Image (cartoon, rainbow, N blue to C red; front, side):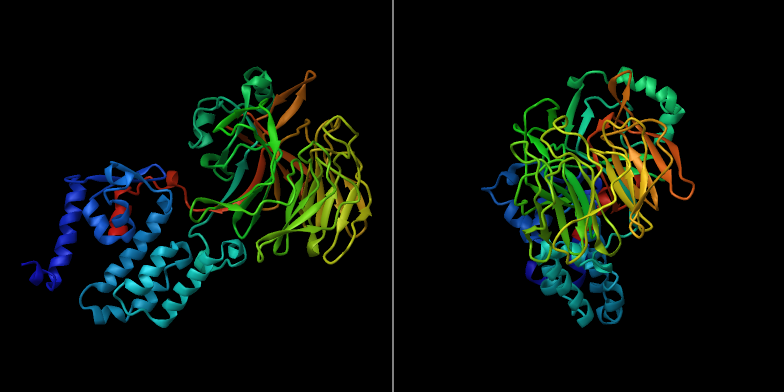
Length: 534
């Protein structure tokens, strides 16, 4: 009987339809797949028939063969949706009349972004899909496989095939120290709801409230959390977690990948660590890929460093100065070549620095300003110095000094000018602008009150300062609001939005993320597995 059924064209479709009906009823499902909190009930027999991976996973000697829930770390829930779309396209092309549908295979499959599909699936599609793939589609699959084979070069290989569909601009808040308890209950819910409950106060009222909520150092902890902020709709969303809690780290983005470098990490790595726990300076580098919601270890820096600056210059990352493993200030500079996947020494600073700021200006000129030359925060005075290094130059050149000595501050480049924003222990909350053409600094409108240890991000030429600390009655107290600097009007504005936690020492970056699960409530999680299984 089975011999004749195997040649029956209608039987395979009827069998899959029957499996789908069973799964829809939740009948005879003997395993649950879990990805990013979404659960998909399934049948082991169908999974094993459909995938060599699951066939091996369910063998009697494996732990998963007896598990009721299988946790899938890759692909993510978003990745399962991409597989669903690919499976849907292939299933349509296999239906009768196949010859007529094959005429549309090129137009249909070229809409698939194969760079967003895992390599093992691409190999199966290329050699075992049962379809005659058009040359153009074969070329796209080979291109995507080459992309997966060169992870270090992926940030330099971006194009339509690897770009996220419907990208959403988000500010990422990465690492640092945070209050142990969230001040607002929702991390994901829009802050409009919080405002309706009265949680959003005017800046003056909020300042008084913050002083009471977080008073003692012991109430802070290092965090692994990476939180995304939708600046347009004032929504916060827990995105992912760092491999370890970090403070004094640095972040940068290349090709819509987030790189997290160095910093101080607790000696005993736990999911959350007390702020006063002993810490060690690290050389580790990790990269986050929002396409697959995955972290990848990158070759570590030549030297462990914290409280340094990193930026992107051409096809390389640059790590400048900082504090070393013994608390000494560093003059060393190193460069990570994305194409060669290795760190090499670069032109040293004229003096050892930590707590300095940096930025990359027009024509790839790197600017480094301020900081301290001694060990620790109080060992030396803050500096006003500004150094510059252009492409191909063998030595840093000294430029006009800032009007204010700064330490733990930020630089940002807007319309060719370099802007310096406040750091620690600055009495007048001043900001200033540097014109590379005239080698002159200009004072701008100061911030209404001081702020330090905040995160800085630039979105559409608006500079945003998020969280941090300030001085009040000779004490450091947290400030949870977000303020923006209007470049054209030289004006500061509170955007009426508060961080869910008191948060300091954070680093910020701007990334394009897939549409979040919270923005797609109407999607039924069970549909994702249907598409994967065809």
